[in-house]
Image (cartoon, rainbow, N blue to C red; front, side, top):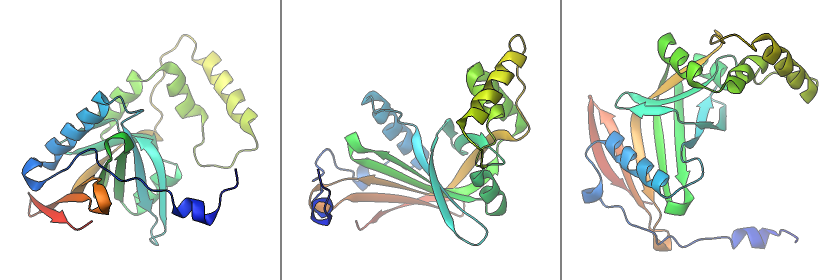
Length: 216
């Protein structure tokens, strides 16, 4: 099948699954996120905790990738990675980020902006220790974001470490751990017919959340 410009332009979906009004939205955006996240789990969406993490370097050049949400509460949203990766280096220079969740089956999107801080060592160690041993070894074996000669480099290193740690516990490496995105704004998007989508945005102003409807 030949893909044409006209074919791409004709791709569209008229969203009719639900509506989202100000009266339906919780006063607390974290609780509202919890409701939508629970709905995504109940809908059996594949990996509902997948989110886009967007960062920028010190010059404002943007970058984005998919990562996994590994916890959230009133303080913020957590994920784990290699501190020496591109995203780790960007967050060190510019500790701001945007998270985006898209649950297509529910015709919903959540966009979160906020400041980023490293999680404390104890929290990162607790999560690392809960991971399968293969994932722990993978975190050590991979020099994330660095150029490597070929896949064999990774596989050889993984096999060597697997043999080395066969009967040993694995300590969290110093270059790996968690971040928390402390939200300053959270927007909930519900697809609606005729592109008149519902958008409810919360902004943290003087320590309190203010809620407004945005035009689609």
